[in-house]
Length: 256
Image (cartoon, rainbow, N blue to C red; front, side, top):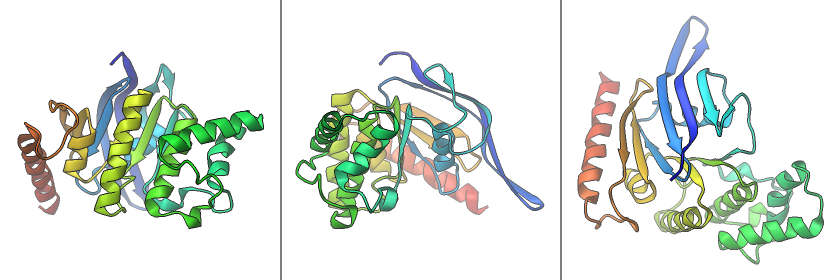
């Protein structure tokens, strides 16, 4: 790990509607180092997705977000989002065209280079041979693989993932977790990953955060479990129990 790639100071986000307002992020501070895989847990409505949407530049906010020394004011290819929605690909473009299109927007015009890049990252997500397929011909898991390849091809500083595996069946989800960890280790990327699943957070994260209903970070733990991590790893049960109890506590507060 090297220095901080992301610094957030006094982040506030309030949604206003009519006579009411809802504060979802409350004076939040966070620093993330280059090469970390940060998983963020929290009860529904705690601001997890809002947080990474602010980091991505999709939301207005109060406070400071600095990525690699640059103040975040709008979306940029240094911060690429992978969504939960399977429909994040252009349905009229093939798999390789979906990956190549953002590269073309960034000024890469040489067809051989575009093909080389799309082939390289499709191989990384185990989709070599699917270049000419259209999104409707792919399973949900395959679509997410394409979305990850599309993000990686842009060489972002940070990949933001908003529950990307939540809608998948358990087996596909486990397979994609393994593939993502392999890519993470090979590419030395920085990942911020939103999830409701404690097991997923512990298996994937080098660091696990818990957000409260008040839009604050209440637990920030380095993951002490040596990879590869699984429910039978030493220390897993204690960490799972810690976050399970904290989540139950936050959900109870939300009902009071």
